[in-house]
Length: 82
Image (cartoon, rainbow, N blue to C red; front, side, top):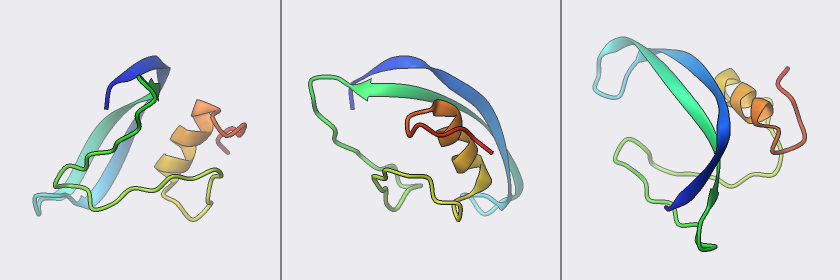
C-alpha cells in the first residue's frame, strides 16, 4: 500500500513469552505512524506472520494494552489512551 506518513504516533515496546519463530521471551520495539493511503486505494497484503486484519471504529478494552495505547495516542478515534 502506498501511503503518506502524516506523523509518528510513538515508540512502544512489547514483551512476549513466545515469539513467532518458537523462541521464548521476545522483546520488540515498535514505531507506530499515522498514515493515509495514496490514490484512494486501501489494499492490505498480509505477511506470513499475520493471519487476518480488521477495520474498526472504536477501541475495544479487550484488546492488548499495547494496541489500545497506540490507537489512543494516535487520536484517530477521538480518544486518548488510559
